[in-house]
Length: 271
Ligand code: LER
Ligand code: MN
Figure (cartoon, rainbow, N blue to C red):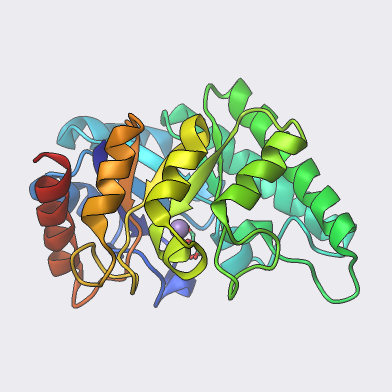
């Protein structure tokens, strides 16, 4: 398992669960100082991802890009893949595809969290699930062409009414035969929705592609009441070798959140 930390390049996402907010150069340098292996980037869109600039930062600091988020498609542009209007759904899928391709150039997968949207008023659930299927199937295909998986993240009930539990999200992908898509398990969402986090993670098996490493209150692991020891033991037992990425609030400030995450990571993963 490898530790990663988030940076938001989107001022409109202020208040959101991202540790660094002062640009890529600042984030890469601080991530390296704290001992992280990788940075997870939350951009406003594919257009702001300057590949040569990011590759130079990766080289300078010896860091990878863990993943690239697409949530700004919703937060900033109000797009989502289950929107009742076809033109908005199309724009949402194009937004995802563009980020997936850029992320692929950086050796990273793209994530669909907020861009999954919800079953809107006046839309039948079956219809919304058909749109969700079309979106993940297409994103999985684009990601495969870019040499990556696509990451689909079940969110808690206050953020979506599609699938809130990991098993349900993974079951949907499996039943529909979706290829090229893996599950992003965010421990904060899981803390709200799951009965048993460790057993649920083990149940995901090979379909688990990425983990958002957050405590019960979305602060750094160690600042809440989740039993992170049991969770990490479960990930070890299933041979999970992906990222534990700190998508957390910068509480009480970015530096303390980063420091506490690495202290917890070292104690739990490297012990
Ligand atoms: C995205 O990774 C996520 O977890 C959502 O709650 C949006 O912030
Ligand atoms: Mn998340």
